[in-house]
Amino acid sequence: MNTQFFIPMIPPTVTAQEHRVGISKSGKPYFYDSAEIKAAKVKFRDYLAAYVPKQQYTGPVRLMVKWLFPITGNHHDGEYKTSKPDTDNLQKILKDLLTALHFWKDDVLVVSEIVEKFYADQPGLFICIQDL
Image 1 (cartoon, rainbow, N blue to C red):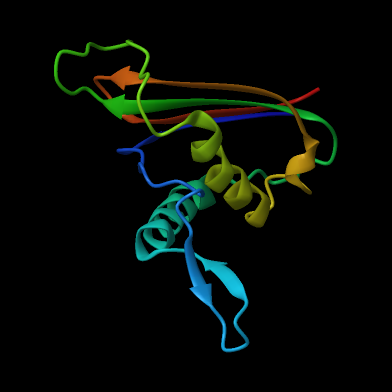
Image 2 (cartoon, rainbow, N blue to C red):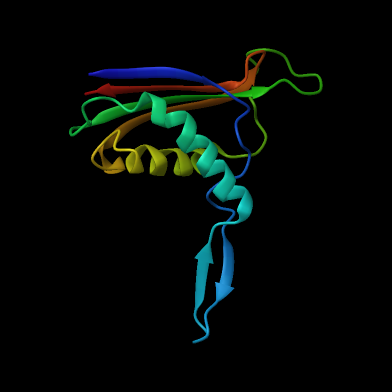
C-alpha cells in the first residue's frame, strides 16, 4: 500500500516542544498546549482528514515528509531551510495527528523516516507513506 499527497499550505512554525508548564493545586507540574499549538493541530487535522487511507497501515512503514516553506529574504526555490524549526520537532505533531486519524495503528510502525525542509515557490507539505 502507498499513500501520498500534497497539502498546499504555509507550514506552521510552532512545534511540540513549545508546551506550556502549569502547576497543579497539589504543586505538581503539568504540561499543556499553547493556543498556537492547539491552532496548528486543528489546522493540520483538518487538512489531513481528507487523505486518511481506507485501510489503516498495520505493519512497518516508511514515512517521507517534505516541509516546503515560503521563500524569504535571499533564499531560492529548492534551497534547504537550515533554520528553525527542527525537523524532529515538526514531525512530532504531524505523526501524533496521523496516529489520531488512524493512518496507522501506532507511530511505532514508522521504521524508516525521510524528512526534508526547504524553501519553495509553492509552500506546503508533501507526505508519502509506504508499506515495507
